[in-house]
Amino acid sequence: MGKKENEMSAMEIDDPKLDGSDQILPRFSMNVLQLMKTSQAQHGLRRGDYARYRRYCSARLRRLYKFLHVVFYMAERAWSHAMEKRQLPDGPNARQRIYLIGRLRKAVKWATLFSSLCSVKTDSRTSLEAEAYASYMKGTMLFEQDQNWETALACFKNARAVYEELGKYGDLENQVLCRERVEELEPSVQYCLHKIGKANLQTSDLLQIGEMEGPALDLFKAKIEAAMEEARSQQAASLTEFNWLGYRFPVSNPKSRVSILKAQELEKDLQGPTAESLPAEKKLTIFDKLFTAYNDARNTIRSDLVSAGNAESVKDELNGLDKAVGAVLGQRTIERNQLLVKIAKSKLNRKRDDKNEKVTKPEELVRLYDLLLQNVADLSDLVSSGRDRKPEEIAFEEECERKNLAFRAERCFYLGKSYSLAGKRVEAYALFCRARSLAEDALNKFQNIGNKDEGTIQELKTLSRECRASSCIEHATGIMEEEKAPENLSKKISAISLNETATKAEKYLLDKLDVYESAVGDANTKMAPKIERFPPAFQSIPRNPIVLDLAYNCIEFPVLEERMKKGRGGFMSRFFRSG
Image (cartoon, rainbow, N blue to C red):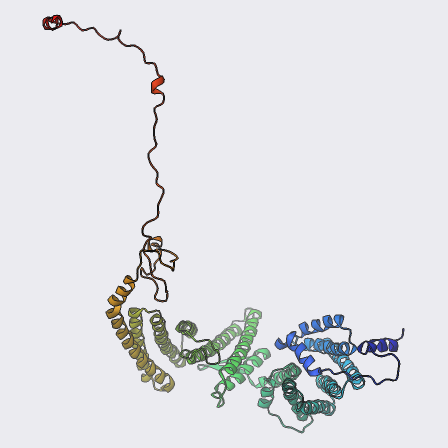
């Protein structure tokens, strides 16, 4: 059987009514975009796992019998295999890139076949979706090849126009999918216009587009990252030294330069004029990238230390650079943890009904301040480890001491909050008083410096007021509870029962003397507390054994009269005997 006959027999499976007559064949309907989105989202691409999605496509192909689905999943499998190669840690090498382009060509081949079959076998809507799918695949291949940007632009525009039109009709779910697809294709269109000189995108615009999510944008993100790495490599040539607290450390390794430059660009995003408008989740993401960049720089520096050998001057410079980068990394870690504290405080008094978010407990803030205190201690040890210290280092160490005192005050305050929620009034009162004392000391130190930190000063003033208010509340609450204690105890004792009730207690008081629990029961428990069963239950006790002497009557005792002495009577005995 030839190839054409195989294709015809496979196509006949889609249409079981085909009998060779001249009847009008029915048109099939197939929601291509929904099928693609559902398959990708449910089998790995929600987390960017192209290997898993490729395995799913292979397994799906073994179970399919409809020809249109077979062709569609053949295209998807080839595309996901190419994207899997694109996600390699160091990027695809020359040989892997050739293989990647080959898989994209295979995807274009199957997508084109899918489009041509749908134009014959399906309705107009399915045919349009298949045409948009084929255009996207072709544009993706040209995008990866870095050539024919005009043709790639035409392909992406064609796909975008189809989805824009289809997004006006159908059910709500399909309209949402089409609009999302249009948003995913827009960055590729803009980048193609940029490459052919019809749009001037700035670096910030490219980064903003690269932050969008979606499988259609992963190839675009790889291109943006490669372009940014190339730009950083060119800029890194001017980065010859790293300045920190009055020291200048030379940076000779190009990899260290690129990593430090990337970290400094991310720091600008966190400290720039638009930093206040960034959401907290976005800032946390930037912090993660910044930590990765600085850690990469430190790894490169330490590799250079190993290969430095006995060159003491080089080793001293590398050790100083490693210390400086580590100190900056410690500062950014403190800033990130302070951001986490800010997020936790915003959720401290929030009700659970607000967007179903988890309410923050005081213990969580205590844990965060423990981390901050450890961060400050590590940073202070790093700075104070040198011998001949510059004034900048001494000022930096004093700043660490002030931060340490402020963090201790905050930690003590929220520790008092946790004791207050547990009903321990005396401990909470003492902790609030201690927190106020620490806050006042920290406030005095911050006010005495020349360059005053107004934000921290206001926070410490607020903390001092809250400590005073909380201590007064705890004092008053403790007095009220002490006044009501006899009355509450009397009520609880009056509820103690010695008799069995309808509600049986799990254990009686005398059964749990080794457990530290209240004798009058828990306030949230509806059952009455009980001391002991009355009347007490019968108990078996041991008694003395009964002894029956059964052998006494059967014993024959010997006659002992012969052994007895015969007595001799006197005068009086004879007189009485004779009488």
